[in-house]
Image (cartoon, rainbow, N blue to C red; front, side, top):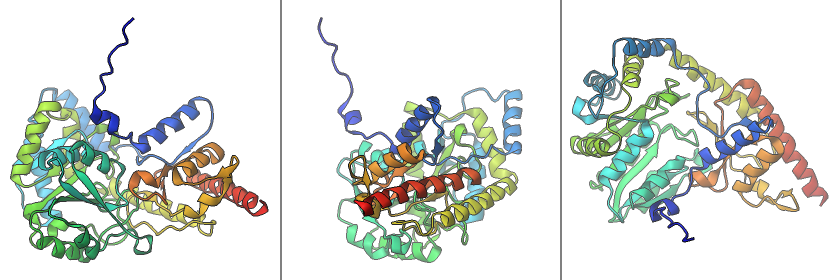
Length: 407
């Protein structure tokens, strides 16, 4: 019998699987075998969507919001984003500059596919969110990774940006607060970046602000607030993190008019508009009370402090205190020499495997975020689970350390 042809494209074959989703899948597989895993691999709030948002969705069902919407989203929802941008960032935009998509992840890929050409270079401060590199690859562009130092809270300095710019640099892509490091750039720091960028007017900035409401020190700052940046910045945001709406799949981009128009053109071909009911829920989220969001933020702060303290003093653990989001991102390269199954752990991916197998704690290796000496641990879990995870990690590492010293 003739073997069936292999249809998978070169594009897919060369694209790496998301390591966060891969680790989550492994954790679920072990859990299905009856093994109790503490999953710190996914960045998902463990809170339920606030009641007033759910009620708005129920009303939308009853009111028959069951038909196609404009590709970019309902007009009143986009106007709510315009009000948000004006009120919070001093950025006056029109509804035509706002495009809603099926999650901020789609908003990001819409923008990258709309502006990048093959061979373009994208400045990518590291650590960076796991999907940025894959999206740049899908757009046939090249990621130019600029690594922030743990000593500086993983923040990239303006002189590092300047040194990485070439005639092919088309775009700067970053998040603040950052997934995975929790670094949150202050207005002064973004002002120093803007000073560099004003000398290079051909570079567009994409600012991922999905964690804006989960910031523990100071107030949220955006580079769009800096002189000369309003007409060359795209702000990407969404409902998942600040409103505990991960499963609703709703994100948005606010962009210069020609980029917003391009995003609508692309989206109109492969998904059209996002869910009508989710959009009505998002309108309630954006225009309603923020008290549930503030309560969640305070809980995330308490969890950060608890987990951070529980792991202090552990051998080889070097971790800046996160300023936002809900992750710890320690440098753990000192663990690479510790023995496991007859050989040194060697690298962060094997450390993550070791912690899953021996401590029953799911984490994600820093390779996925552009920092192979590191490990990401989500704090979006209960305090009891975080304390137990810290205990398990400490026990597992200290046992390896004893074996290493005896050997």
